[in-house]
Amino acid sequence: MIKIHPILTGHVQVKVAQRRRKTGGLLRVLLDRTWTEWLPIYAWAIEHPEGVVVVDTGETARASEPGYFPRLHPYFRTSVRMDVAAEQEIGPQLEKIGIAPKDVRTVILTHFHTDHAGGLHHFPESEILVQGRDYQSARGFMGKLRGYLPHRWPEWFAPKPIPFEAVPVGPFGRSYAATEAGDVLVVPTPGHTPGHVSVIVKAAGVSYFLAGDTSYTQRLLLEREPDGVSPNRAAALRTLDAILEYARTEPTVYLPSHDPQSAERLRQRQILDTAV
Ligand SMILES: [Zn+2]
Image (tube, rainbow, N blue to C red; front, side, top):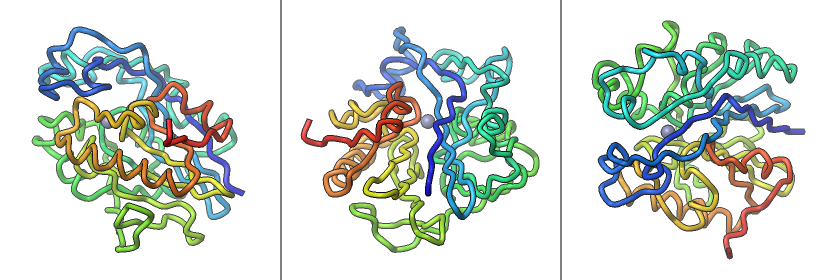
């Protein structure tokens, strides 16, 4: 039996032009004065007979403290706000549902943005899988310029690049099976970042699509609206179309990290209706 737990690791506010892309992309985000409401930051714990797999690690409480983000970086200066309490970090939350972080077998990051990588320090003993190209561009000084926080990663951090294989999963040309049973599959979903990945959990009769930031909400997926920070709009749109195509053939529960409806949709096993 596989069980997926939503882990709410606090909330984030971004600009409206980040959630739904406007002409001008990132520049438009920086200039936008309108904030979204507080959005959830979800990570996911998959209880699997082969061990616990965690997808994304959420944000750290330190991100709510002044001075945590680089003060001179235009994005952090103007365009994002975090609200995370210490007990909302993924470590204590896993403990609360009876999972010791040290017993987490594998952690998969959908991408390196701070609200997905901020809880890495809870997993010094887990195998950590990341997309290799995104890892390279998130590292070092250039990584900091690009809006990553490599200086906040734990010192022991030495992730393993996801060894994708030429095994298609529906419209996704490559995949990596994170379990022997082949029911936890990582697929490339580029757009939000060039190396962004999603995780498909194949349970009885339904695919749970742990989507990271492929879109901010299910509605934006259905409307085929990429976000405002994707460096490549065309790639982001191709990914949205691939997810929709997947959902047309496999009953799919779509679970983006920042969709206020994600946890409820998981609880109700609400299948994505692509005809809407
Ligand atoms: Zn992101």
